[in-house]
Length: 116
Image (cartoon, rainbow, N blue to C red; front, side, top):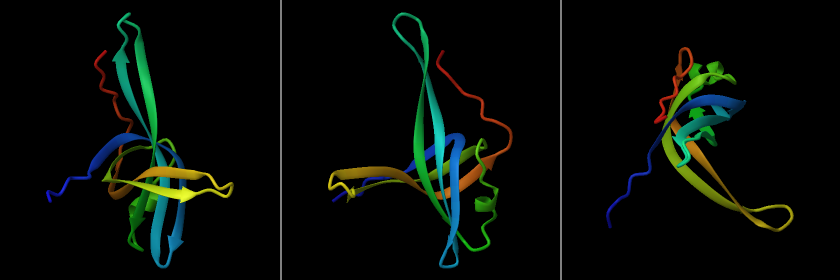
């Protein structure tokens, strides 16, 4: 059976941030907003924003996790994971997140490249 590649790279702006120490390792859970710009057939410009959930585990001395802040430009590389679970009300739910293996804070803000 051929192995399929599960890899993603996102560049965007950090939204909410939650960090914690778990058994000697630092963990950050944050959201990243990415934009996609396009034109409708009518010529009207549109921007579609997608929020992605990111989980990043760092070493105990990881400086990147300490620097992650809302509003920063960031590049995240990792893999996509979807988990299914049963909510308290008994309904079946799923969540999709990026498990980051590398997080790079970008100085300044990203310039949005667009096809407009």
